[in-house]
Length: 158
Image 1 (cartoon, rainbow, N blue to C red):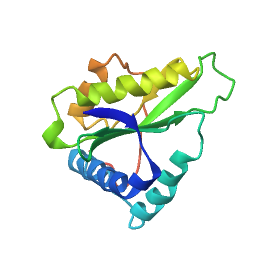
Image 2: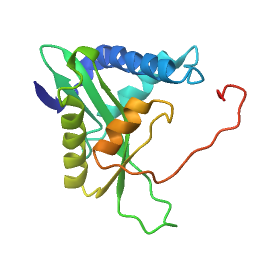
Image 3: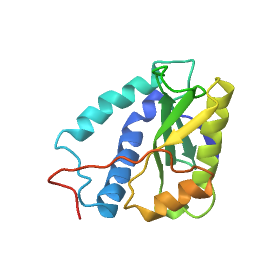
Image 4: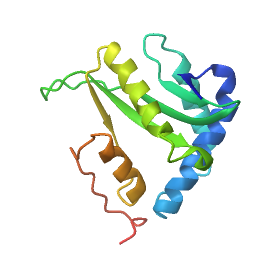
């Protein structure tokens, strides 16, 4: 299993993995629903992952084909809080056949290592509160509750 930077020609495969991540999110929380044009918008957004050579935004787990990925980016500081430079993990997904083998942990460690080397000493991540498996995973890696986002909307499930 190789953890390495994603390559632009892998974009269709990355889109497929991202769609699987969205299905997992929708399963964990039915109010988490993709917009009808989500895949096209994500394809456009994912193209930007390859434009900044100073920060590797996407790493993949390759086992004769992609079986997982992690994506993140630097956070633009507002200058109102005294925080070290921060990178935010946006997406992490590992195929079900490769879970519970330490691959997610390896992807996170590789991302944090690259972010730290690029000067981002703090890493943050958000996840669905209803996805108990994901929350437990992030906490097992030392991530702690920092902020809570509360929503009042017609789609929120009680």
